[in-house]
Image: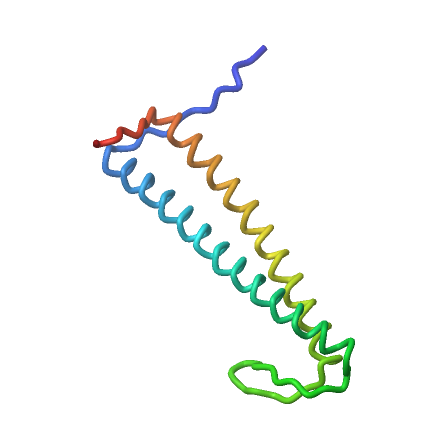
Length: 123
């Protein structure tokens, strides 16, 4: 059976350091974006909980929604489905970013193994 071990491209110490830093930066950026989107989804849920009560009491009640920096007047029955769609879209985006994070993390682990990188704590 043939060896399936992939060939590691030799890199200079500087190139390894640069690539290592880039992996860390990419992972941090994705994690940050996931945090932002999760907070936004939580805000949508909070507003939806409040508006669901208003929807039961008076579906034609006025409410205001910020769309593209413009405050528009709508009814609760019009806003609730739009907010639910937005929240679901945000959650889908978070899931996609989480998958992207896992993939990038696996690439980073492979990179560290290929170049025998070990993290040393300086305490």
